[in-house]
Image 1 (tube, rainbow, N blue to C red):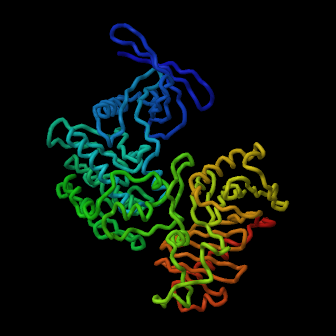
Image 2 (image 1 turned 135 degrees about the horizontal axis):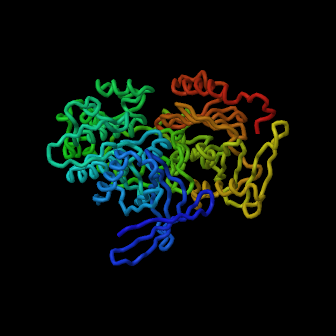
Image 3 (image 1 turned 120 degrees about the vertical axis):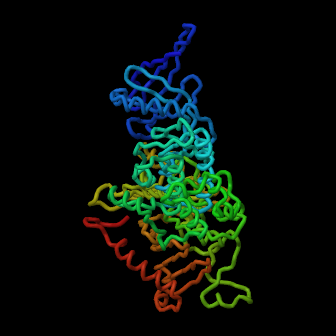
Length: 567
């Protein structure tokens, strides 16, 4: 059957695309698609959401302008991509639906993966836990085993070509550089790939290449997921290629990895392609055998690391997993699931009903523990959870008194009470005027605040446990400033409390009004000190963190030029 399309402009962002299908018996039928949200681009293609209007099914629509296919090589490349992808049917490969064309474009209709690619995941999370890497690598290997069994080499395995469905299942896509061997033992000689992932034999180009280039890229992928950047990455492509040829890379000392994880990467990144492990040998490596691995990760890991309880339930071992800073919990788009976010150490101890020891009592483990400071009864406030979505809107957070707030990128702030009845909005109309705080009902507020209130509502739904809400008196405490560094995230609250959460999960709570410092060490033990005495403490971990915090806070609390009053 033949098909063509007619396109009718709906508005600046939406287009109606009509596919006319002429069957072999002469009958003509049409399908109508609404071209919606832009999803991404690559090469000559742009990808959008395509909604089939008859049944409301949403696909990913890949649009290639025919003007970009003037050269015969470009046309051959596209037809090869279509032919290869169309022939593939596997649960870890993006499903190819069909393709059609008109006088201007070629349209490829694909399965939509709603949770974007591993590129966006790493951008939000910075790097993943070993358990997550195990889960994703096994799915990628499954896809590669299928491809190689059908004589297909992908040749472009990378973060951006690995998609996540709404069920958190890996789907391999983009077969623009894929090739199919005509016979066993055939070697391909085209120099292609993405610089950071390209195999050394492709760069050499002497003896050709085969399935082993996908194995190499798999090793680069595993390293990138655990470290947060590719092993051979430099600012210059020629230097990157030289490092690949020399197989020159290292594991950063500041990122703890298990020996099995390092061995796994080393076993794959071998210059000689004949010496690299097979996919079955990869699956039998100790890294993928040391614990039970979940089939899929929870959707909350789009924003934050797996919870401690999930780790215990699925790991089946006491493996040492990389500690995560909550400063690394870069958010996903608000419409995604953000449940099961990490709790602060304070919250974890409160939930377990563990006593908190003062500095004087912490070494006396035999007698009952008590303290004047207890999270369940103290009037101190701290940030329990947060989601960093400053790439678009700002930082959303939950306070220990159940208030949920957002620090927007334009420096305005919004905070709602725990029961969700009221909110306060803080803004400065101009640089020369004092900051204004206005209280509104969540049912009635100015139209110009609609977008910000909608975002507040989304953060409330995903951060707040509705079964554990408290109400509080106005004015509500809110995050006045925040700052993320390579070692910690800093929150300055409006009640003059500064909270510092470090990468190693230790925390400081600096309460200037009561002149005390609350310190949570790496093991989760809580101590309380007088502010003036804290720096003289014999606790080196405490004093080191206080010195670092002082340096950062000196910069953080310094007013910006022309800033009349920090609100």
